[in-house]
Image (cartoon, rainbow, N blue to C red):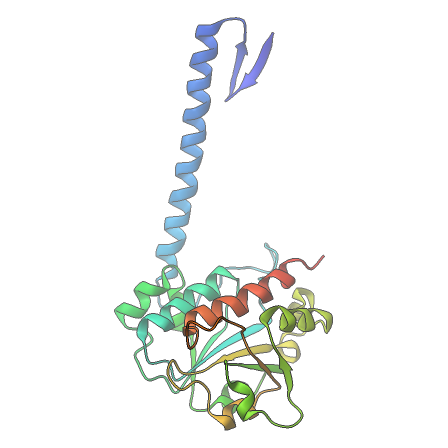
Length: 244
């Protein structure tokens, strides 16, 4: 009986030949894994460049799952947090990071190291003076914070979990990959995250279309900035990537 293994035709009734072929098969698999690792490292090295770059080419690849999303950091004070959020954006296929009134150097070595593959997003991040300025081109904007409802305007929607928000955005077609490609400007959604210590100011919350609270237990006062961003983007990615 003959089978095809790793580029060889093998007689399974010949143990020595079979063992040689199995070794060859594993060697081929190892080589393939090595090529994939080298390709990944090359991509990471390329992403450290300062020139504007995009990871997706619409003419060749499927569009980014969160191509309709902007992530906005307000007054980040810790360089590592800015880098961590850039990495999260890369992980969840969001290529639009914006910063309002940064209280640190978002392109410092510490921040770039934390970005780990998402450095390009820090180099390309648009910087603004106010939240209103940063969200000016967005159709729907969401302020995140544990106590954000304290600054809510009367007509603002309130979501009590990231999954509830993501479900709403999916139902309304606001995270549609197709819409993001065809009419990107009108379909843009913004997730707005506040300062590490004080969060968003009441007027910054009021400038947004909606507010989202992230439920958590009683043993900790609040989530870190990067943890909150991870929860929100993961929920959004899950519904966007599931689009037929």
